[in-house]
Amino acid sequence: MKAEQSCGTGLSRVGQAPVAALVCSSATRGAVMPENAVPREEERIVLILDIVDSTGVAERLGNVRFHSLLSDVFVRLSGLVEAHGGEVQRLVGDQVIATWLLGSEQQNARAVQCVFACRQALDAARSTLVRRHGEALTFRAGLHCGPLAAGEIGGKRPEVVLLGDAMNTAARIEQACRTAGHDVLVSLPLLTRTAMPADVMAASIGSHVLRGKSHRLELFALTQWFAGLRPACFVLKACA
Image (cartoon, rainbow, N blue to C red; front, side, top):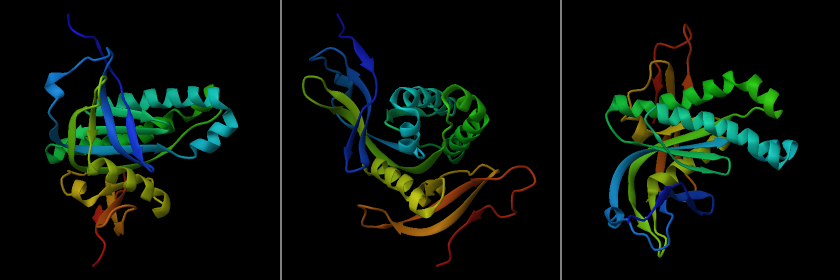
């Protein structure tokens, strides 16, 4: 008889940086998943989406009403991640952590398209959210790509996790949104492997040493342009 398993999510943190996103866990104590016993490496895009001013909203609404609002918003956002070919790895506190397998430039563009689809969905739902919950929400987002190790970690109740520097770096990029004053930031490594949507402008904000990192990383602010407003050149790089 096969051991029953339940899929879910989990996260380990070092400071404020997520270092592992849980994919699936065993529901039966002592259950094993032989196919996941040996870690494998996968190239993935990582999206860290963080709700703005969640602490303030929670204080104004109270725990129960804020929980209801966050649930409403996360259901909408999770559906859009899946509709754009991604996987929601974790809903942790006020964050959504999602990944896509790294593919062609056109396939990689789905992660960028997803971010702006999420923004449009929350903008369109603003009046509904305010009517239902008394508040609406918005977010900041960081995008990066790189290798992640996927495999079991644990003892009697092993868990399959994704971990690696790409996860940490994506979290640091999202945090950089706050200091840089931008809502959406993407790393140069991901930008160079993505066919940027025609309605999205990527403008360099220069190279940054992210907290806990030893090397500089060039970041780009992403902005969506609507009909009649898109400039002739929509990918800008900082001058040396």
